Image 1 (tube, rainbow, N blue to C red):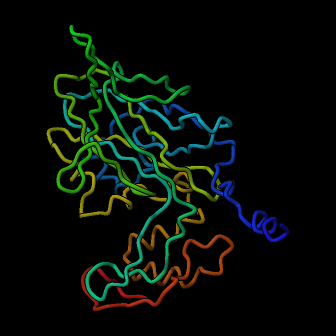
Image 2: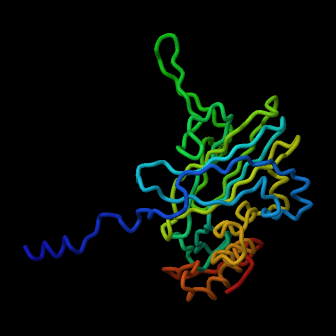
Image 3: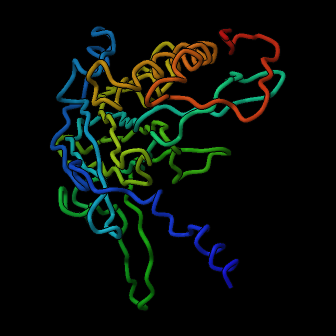
Length: 299
């Protein structure tokens, strides 16, 4: 009997360690209007997100006291008649360590997943949004009932993201940016809503910081002019973990990530003893493999 009691006391299946803690960060918020950033001005300005506060905003999402409440944020913008590129980047950075002897970036250290979060971005005409901005999250889904009484689901989401094999209606994962193009042809002056639905909050503080922006592409139909020079989408909006302000504890690892796998290895080696280290020691041996264009060297 005593052995059984000790066994029960030694097991914790409550999952309390992974449950979000309520903080001062809003669980549901509305960012107001985003004024589309002209891509020409974006390029001329050196692509610095904080220089365009009307079109690119930093904020954060927290946990609600009601664990069953759907959390997230909204923003809105006005159609220009052309194509608009929408981008959201949740904190912080994500990489997967590779032990392959060829190809890939060959990261030596494991990413600290506890500081990462995830939001899923949808967008569409505000008239189709069924949530209440700043109060309750919603989506762009509706149900049509035909003359026979049969119900049909209709999806008015205009932010279409593609995955492997051309699959649609997909979203990126942990700490990974999402982006899409919304065509506002014949919808100039019409209001659109962006819905950022929380998929997961960082385990370390239950506060998900992020940056979201809208870019006016003019006659272009892809986001290429936003991500010029083949910039990694993760490196478009920087330091989102500290709401765009310098000095955050994840600023250094993001800068290293944007410089290549070798820079990440070097940075991690120097910061493993930090109070809140951005990396973890690998659980198994590291195989540097053969250097190639994807590997920048490092320790």
